[in-house]
Image 1 (cartoon, one colour):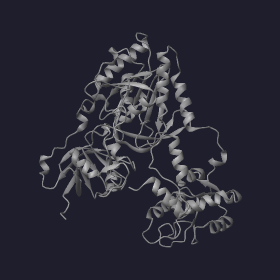
Image 2 (cartoon, rainbow, N blue to C red):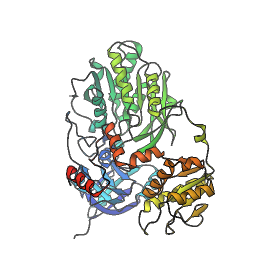
Image 3 (cartoon, rainbow, N blue to C red):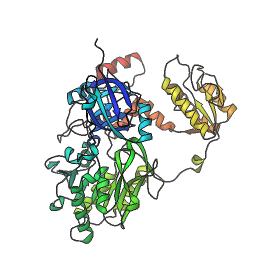
Image 4 (cartoon, rainbow, N blue to C red):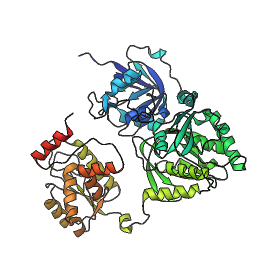
Length: 562
């Protein structure tokens, strides 16, 4: 077996990171950025917003579920990707999985990248690399293959290129022409799921290039501005066309129709309104960004991918901020006070999730339908209603706002050394977080060979089996006012569900913190989980529960084998 080819990631500050090459064995350059998503690498790599960037994935294992095939839906749109090709310049991972397993997979990540001419590097300490990028900000980088002349690989700056013009479509194309409402979608680097979300809600969508003069068209009911890569000021033609459109609608020279922008589209609408944009130190890229609807306690977990932001302090009269990022307090959306114009920095259509805010497409299309029918609607009020519907009732039990004083953490039970280390790690981090908040921690875990049972970590440790009987005894003796079930794997979950069903937690006044027991039951019971996914028309591998050998054989006969 031949030795893997080596390569180096070289950053603009001179630091070098050596590793093994995979994918296409070619040198490249771009802007080094990091993304915190745990899944979704096929979607991220085909997202045009990552054009010419060297993507560092912080999750340690990548490629384990392979790459799906090029299946298309009834509208000719690829089902499992966000565009027709890989857009990143290169990929940096800690560990590449050579073997993959998934019912949709047809090839490995490395083979896909090799076919696409995109290089990758593995065996890199992505944790240390990410910490450096967080400290210094995103920076230019190049990936140099062993044997290539370092000095002959230029470190090109993608921010000086009109990346929008590079990734946008070259000619208009209509999807779902029989739709009940007409949308013109300005493709600045459109993700396919934005198109899918529109079509699923009955829209006929005309996708046009970034520099298309949509002010000359009059047959659309709503205008949509897509995401895209790079500096928004590079798309000056789009901003000029948009500014003219907004001004003519505001002055009464043109019928008022709704406008909706996402990500780069948010920045373009803001620039057209008269606001300013600026480059973030390291951007927001991942699936777990908390965004609050301004003026409410409603917070949503969102997916994001952007290196620039809108300065909402420079918003002109008539415009107001709509959402705010709770991590860095940057602007996440704007809305006009009286006209149906709004935009968001995050991705409501996110693949691979979360999609909590996908209902914003309903607000846009409902407004477009009302506008086409000659009816006036209050878009701001519609967005508020939709956000409240997504969150659910604003009623809450004040007890749930009380900070617990003592919490029981249920560990993973008896394990072999080296087995299920993720539970030990997550449990130890949980105990550290509780102690930082000044909360007394009690741990039950019979395994002495773990980090979480180390002396001085938890305030008190019970080396007892994780069973309902023993946990009940600990509850009776310690009287904690909170319990965490999610840090001990299947053993802790099963034990917690049994205690909850028998009313033990209620008897001792102990609240289940974190994931509700009802959600644990719904996800751990495969049949319930499958039924719930079917309720929302989400694809899932066929399965069937069995309680004995004969039922298992019958199920295998019906389902078949891989």
